[in-house]
Length: 129
Image (cartoon, rainbow, N blue to C red; front, side, top):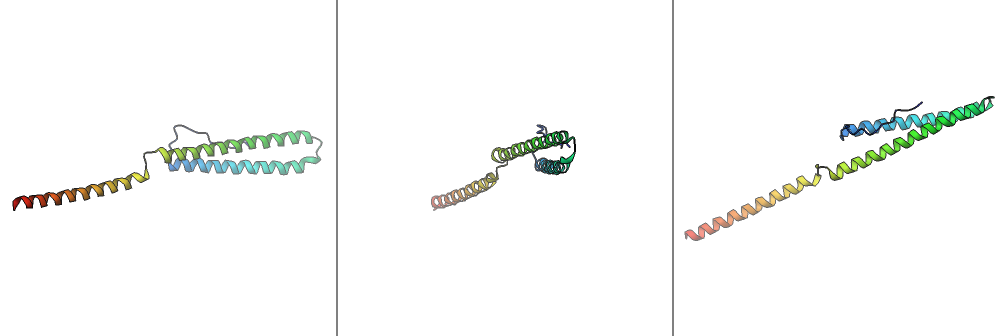
């Protein structure tokens, strides 16, 4: 059984839903591959009494190698997805600190304007007297 291995599609959007879909697909594929390897190991133990044991052993070995390769591909895809999420988080425009910094700057600017306005009023009063 050859599981459906997720491939990186450049047109796939780097969104939460896209990442969740990839994660779910990777988990399903890992689970299926692991179960198939486990099933092949059980089949190997049960089939040792047949006259065509060498053929059965070769089939089981091929099945295990194929599933092991699928496991490796899925792990590589998962690592790539983690790197993409890190890059998205580090280099995206969605900087979480920007809004806080903007609020601080606006607050400081408002305080400076109030102080300037207060000085102007004091200066006007002093000239008027």
